[in-house]
Amino acid sequence: MKETFDRLYDEYHHALFQFLFYMVRNRESAEDLVQEVYIRVLNSYENFEGKSTEKTWLYSIARHVAIDWLRKQARRSKKFLIFDIKESENVLRDKDPLPEELVAKKESFKDLYKMLKRCSFDQQQVLVLRYIQSLSIVETAQILSWTESKVKTTQHRAIKELRKWLDQHPGLEEELKDGTN
Amino acid sequence: MEPIKWNDEKIEQFLKNLPPIKDRQSKQDLYLKIQASINYKQTKGKRSIPSWGLPALATACALVLFGVFAPDLVNNNSSNSKMEFKRSESGKMESQSTASFDRAGDQSDAKMSLKSAEMSNHFKYHGQKFAKDFTGKNMDWVTVSYMDEQAQIVVPVSFITKKSNYLEKVNDQLVSFKPTELGLSDSPLNRAKLSEEEETVIIDWPPGVIFESEENLLDPMLSFTFNNKKYKAEFRTNGQAGYEFPNIGRKNEMALSVPGSPFYRFDTPTTDTFIVSLYSAGKKANEMPKDVKSAINEMDDDQERGLKPLLPKDMELKIEITGKHSIEVTFPDSYKLSEEKENNIMMIDGILLTAESYGYHSVKFNIPGTDSVGPYQLNEPIKDITGINFIQ
Image (cartoon, rainbow over all chains, first blue to last red; front, top):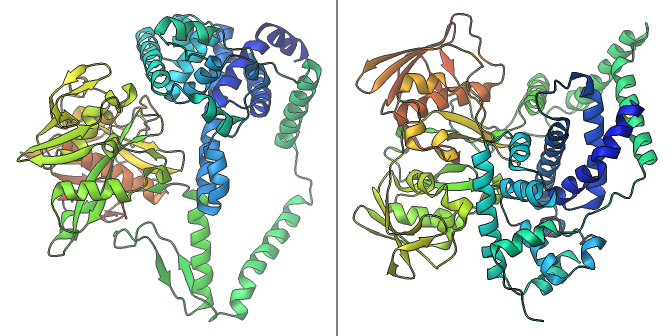
C-alpha cells in the first residue's frame, strides 16, 4: 500500500488537492477530503480496470468525494436554518477566509475567485478542470462522464456567465472584505 | 485603481493563473492518517463476535426496550403522541396530526412504528392529489416551477390555494413560498412582473437578469407553470417588446406545451423528494420516447443530472392501450411491492404522470396480490389525478 500511495502522491497529490480546494473552497475541508480520496483509491486500486487513465480515475473519485461533501454541507445549512438562524447566516455566506496564496494577489484574482462560486456547479467543475488544472477536453469529459461537446458548451457558457457576473459587479473589494476576510 | 475590463481571453488567462493552493499536511502525516483510517475500517469490518456476544447483545436489547417502554407503562395516560404523518391512511396529505392513545400497548406500538418509519424513511415525498379533493370547496391549486440548486432540473411544485385568478395564484406562491427550504432555488419568475392577456402570459424582466443556466431550462419552467391555463408566453423588457437572452438572443414569445415524457425521482440536498420529467432536465421534445409504452418502460433507467428511476431495474411491464385516453399496466407475477410505502406511491404517481403526459388520463394497475397502494385503490382505474409534488 505504501508503495502505491508514494507513487500516486508524487504524481498527482498537488493536482488533486488543488482540485478539491477549488471545489470546496476551504483548506481544512480539502485536507480532510484528500485523505478520503486516497482511502477510496487505495481500497479499490486492485479493482481499477484501466478503462480510463489512472489520472482521470483519480479525478473522478475526487469529484465524487467533493460532491458528497457539498451535499452534506447543504444539509447542514438546512438544519441551521431550522435551529439557529444566526449560524445559518454564517454558513450560507461563504465565511471561509481567502487562502493566503490568494490574499497577496491582485483584486482581480479575488474578484474572479468570488465570482467563480456564482457559476453553476457543472460550470465550476469544468472551469477548474480545464483552466486551473489544465486538463484537456477529452480528460475533462472522461472525468465528468460527459460528451466532449457538452464540456465545450459548458466551458463556453461558463466563461460568458463569469464575464457577465464580473461586468455586473465591478466593486467586489468591499464585498470580499465583508464576506470572506 | 481602475477596474479591469474583462473579456473572455482575460478571464481564461486569470483562471489559469489563480494561485496553486498547497496542502499543509506532510506526505508522512497524510499517509499515517490514511493508514490508520483504512486499518480501523478493516478491523471494524472483520471483528468477530465472541461466544458470549449474542446473549449479551440480546440482554442489552431487552434492557433498551424496557427503558423505552417502562415510562409509558407507568404513566400511560400522561401524554398524547405527536406524530407527523406524511400521508394519512386515507391517503390525504396531512402536515401534522395529533393522535391520542388510551392503551400503553398502542402507544408503544405507535412509537415503535414511528421509529421504524423514521429509520427507513429518510426523505419527504411531495405527492399528487385527486381532483375530487377540490370539488365543492373553496379550494384550488396551482403549479409553479423552481430549479434545483445547480440549475440543472426544473422542479414543478403544486400548492393548494384559495379559488382565484391563475396568475394571482402564481404570484402569491412566488411571494410566499421559500424554495430554498426544500433545497430548490428561487424561480426566475421572482424577478419578473407577470400579467396576462387572454391566453398569453406576459413576462417582463429588467435586462440581464436571466442567466445562461436558467435560459436552458426556461422552456420547461414556463411550460410547467403556465401550460394549465396559457398557451403562449410573451417576453418584455421594462415594458418594451422582447427580451435579450444570453444565448438565444432576442426573443419575443414562446409557445408553451409539455411534451410526453417519462418521470423520475429527484432528491434535493434537504432530502426532499420530487417527481420530475425528463423534459425537466432540459431534454427536448424530440428526444423523448415516442409513445407511452416506451416511456413507462424507460422509467427503470438511470438518467443524467441526478434523476433516479422510479421502477425497479429491468422490470418488464405489460402496457395495453385500452381506450383513447386509458391504459392498463400489468406488473409481472414475481413482482413484490417495496417495503417502503412511499416508494410504492411514488412509482404509481410516476406512471400516472407519465401516462398523463401522453394524454392517457386513466390508468388501471394490475399488481399481483395487491389491491391498494397508499391512497390508490387498484381494483378500478385511477383517474383525475391533479398537480404534482404538492406542498402543504
